[in-house]
Image (cartoon, rainbow, N blue to C red; front, side, top):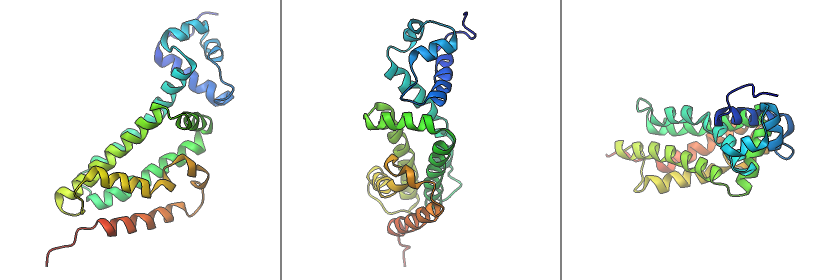
Length: 199
């Protein structure tokens, strides 16, 4: 059967997403992807040297889809840093809720990579920490947040909100009160970070 689309990395990644959705990460194979594209599995391996490399590439692309929306929130200097931090943390949770609800098979693939300490998972966390650091740095610059080290403070905030962003807590993300819980944690963190006004 001739290939239905030009065989490039994007075509392979799109087909792999569909195969993962259909079969789940445990049963999806490179042969399934090749069959869906109408090519040999050797043709797929010319673009991705292993099943692991293909899985990492498709998961990275899937994770990157909401990165830009989060980056816009993080960089919006019209919003005060404290409010921006709260909004960003809620957006991270909302994005993860949507992913687990709308794409459970790809979310499971991400879970497998995270458990294997893949660079995809560590790069994803590093990207989130970079955005959070930028928010905290803006707060330090305008005097609204108290910190001597924006990067270290961002890491503390991220770790303190792990229940709302770490895979280990994914089963809790659909609980009805989870947003209110995050808001309470945000208020406590922001109270601690709030720079006192001069008398």
